[in-house]
Image 1 (cartoon, rainbow, N blue to C red):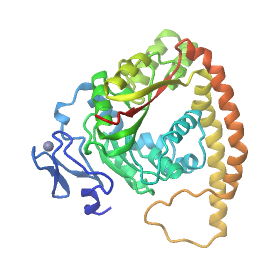
Image 2: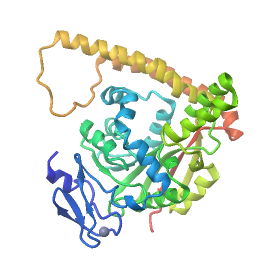
Image 3: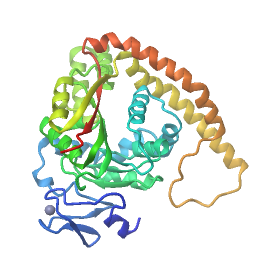
Length: 379
Ligand SMILES: [Zn+2]
């Protein structure tokens, strides 16, 4: 990526995240024309998220510590970026992503729609979105390490910046859709309020918000299953230890940051969203499928076939010179056939599992919630 590309976004106008004034070039980075804050380039991305670091609260410091310092390990643990991409590009393989897909279709994205993902991590969701809806997007994450990984692996023309959810470096009314999946549970309630206000600010009137976040009840999450397992094996002491590790180390999930459906509804409405819907999702059946069946059955099988197919191609095709940037995933014929057979089975399973989850959801026991809303047309 050239320095020119780093300086100017081709999609939206970048502004100072603190005072909203225009930016000027400054060395390899940029500087605010009014408050003179300097935002440097770290790796290959412009970094807005370190500017106020001295004033960060404990929660932000903790989240940054987890996601920035350990990001490379974290990404590696969740499988090679490219293999994940090939899987998500082909079909929706978790119930949660099927639900995201269903909500996404209702937004009627076009090729020129502008999408912002807040808390984009290594960027798999924006690449999925590009593959599925041909929309290009901008990803921001507090972690420069994460967005650098995203930028390096991008084949879709997305842009990435290190920025805080509560202070976005984009001009008002820039985006058609703002997404934040599994992000706002990492923010305190005050930060949630500010982040939502920022998301709505950068939305165009009539634009949509899509969020997924954990429920305060915290049932049927990965950590809940691990805690239950610990209780069965080692009693109360093991649970305490397990809980400490789960919340404080594995993913920066601090339970004090989780939210109820009612509080979420109020927060979304206060931020200026209309037609807010909060949809509980993931009780025991859908969670087990998404967390364990996909992880231990579906993905390993797909990866195995994937690897075999790649090895077969390598043996039977001439040597190709290494490419500069990673190629976009293509769907070979076997995968298209696989999806054709699997998709109706998957749809039937989802219907059944969601029905089985319904009594638990009705009693308030569920893992998380989707939030959708629209920015009011005149504001
Ligand atoms: Zn400024």
